[in-house]
Length: 428
Ligand code: EPZ
Image 1: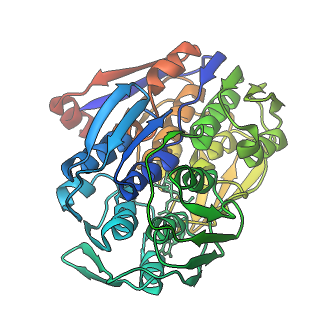
Image 2: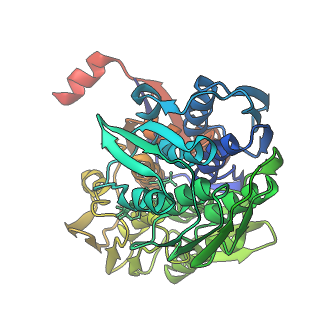
């Protein structure tokens, strides 16, 4: 097993290039199933979630051609199956997008329920409500989502809760449905807009993405296209937090600053200097932070996927800071790991209270999930001493070449093979 070792205390300086957005890529790749044609997708992040989703399409009969590290061509003309078994879906939360895409193509889908991060209940009732309103019969049997429709017909669908996944899945299922579909109380994340732009490049008619109401006029056929994924808002935010945490001075390149507004605003509130350019932004920090309160919300609110990373700064911010998790029921598991490093945090359900301490000290910690793992890296870079992070497979899911990128910024960070006897000894 591998783990990450960090000798903390180095200021991060220099430039980092942000990769394509994971949460856009894992929605756009299955969307390629909707055209019996060739889709060339560029600026894909080179991460295990993209590898997983690509393997799933190949297993269903798609011909996949890797053009380069960030460009893949998906030829879905020979896709002949609407069944995706558990061994293919268990490592990828976003595999449920295959239900919407396969329904859209075959009016049939049989997809094993996904795996992915564990921070509270992750229901799919809103996805199912959308599919049923479009005319599908959906049932869950032996952990498979089984959906079937004679034909799909446009419908008005009100989302009881703002849901990124359900909004995406309904978009995928409705682009070839007969008539007009209206999604109200839709999610507005940048990756929703990116998917809509991809679908429209394939000949779909999707309007209003990025607002509360998305209108989709069904079309009979979709065709292939060439499309470039947007930069990853959360990867960019993670490097912004790391630059700030280490008192650094970093230029974050290949970003859409507008997508980072809420993250920049919070960092500025903490005392960090942010300078925006057309497709980059500069983060300059003294390494000292004012306390601030954070409430995570659906976009354009502060993103829940940045909550663990930004909270690391609050562990050493002077005074008391309050973090309220407005999206997930249980997204503070990483706090136990920060407490091992000397943080003073009280968690009560979806609220965490941070009392600033002088510094964090390095310790052996775990990555509880993808973004918690990223937060452990930020903490290790900021801490005095050595931090070792286990379960780094979570981080590999969503951050391309993160060891190399952090090293290039001056971090003392590396991967180390970790034998079972080491683990036994560590367990004491
Ligand atoms: C997506 O998850 C992201 N994953 C998550 O990012 C992100 O945290 C989340 O959106 C919120 O932005 C991907 O895009 C692959 P939701 P998703 O449906 O779609 C409830 C990361 O780190 N809900 O917007 O699963 C749900 O319980 C990952 O990249 C229902 O009640 O999130 C939650 O409280 C982690 N019923 C809220 O809505 C449903 O049918 C928002 O969930 C669906 C969701």
